[in-house]
Image (cartoon, rainbow, N blue to C red):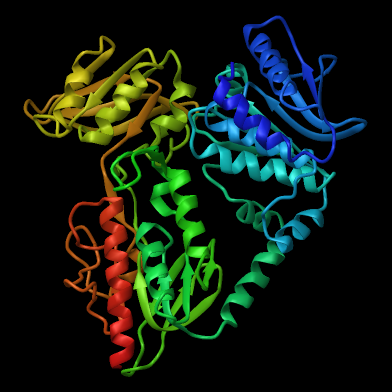
Length: 518
């Protein structure tokens, strides 16, 4: 189950336990139960503070509780948490075992004050790189507050629940039996939804901050690099981001960032944040920009307003808001989003095991998605709008070698078809013959590129047509003096992490140069 290297690493982590930990398994005679028991026994072998019991009576079998002897922490895994969830398992063991969390103390106190009962259930897949953040957040809440319970459920193991609740995207969270949310959610975001008064207080506190020398809007690679370069100049630097890490958080493998041979998006995003925190940078998370009010005079203050009600002022602003997945903009897409229409094959692929799906888009991301899905689903149909694929030849060769993949060229998707609240098919047109056709399937994976997050800037700074990217010059300057931009939201070609980081550094240096000459 666990190789020797992983056991050695786990043993080192478990030396941090200060309290005894009990793993209580609820088992049946399934293969999943045998794998679970093997995992628990291997964990027990790594620490004398861990014991295993097999007399659990939870309704979900197999599952196991992580608790202290004589105490019910109500932190449970219904599944074998390997893959991306192994880190969640290790953190849960440490936190139940008395190792303190690194989350801000103020946030921990806020969690302890939440009133219950709050019963959370999270459906995940072990290939989902968005799931660990949600599971780790809810597990910590369970450890801190006895009024909170959490069960993390492997959707691949509990397909009956996935079908009964019509779940077609992970992570999906239920609270007290009702749908609470889907997709990546940070701890502070979850707490803010449960404690709405705290969100208003946070917005008020942000608005009371003194003006920054440079305010960076966005926390992806461009924003992080800008923050570091600005802070190193000794100027007052702030970062306001919807989520630190940005689009990188939704990236699985990163193998082309120079000096880092291989990593994944969440790890890279965490490294970005850690590096930024080495400097005197004020990071304000969960802040979505809604309006930019440029300075009225040379040397005046720019103002950025946020959906939370917060407002910040700065002598210079760097816009690094990144991009988002492009939609097909066809009937049925929004209606059946998370009900069969999805944008993350790595996260949601296991939920479509044995089913027929389509992938929209013939670039690298689309072909990679089709290849990954072919190993899980019954059949994949890739639809390409043009008359040939745009992906790298090595990917095309792999794709054409798969027996359960078909490729349709000159295929224009016209509608996502659904029935009883879920996807049942896809309508498309052959662009050569004009014929209207239909595919019967259960899932649609959209992989057709990105759109810049710039709608809130229309009429304020110059945007390109028709893409809506922020127009910048060679120094990252926008059409508004004192406002700079960097990364995927700009007209700079080649949307790559390494390019975004370089552009962020350039924008910060340009902002500093503007400040000393103003």
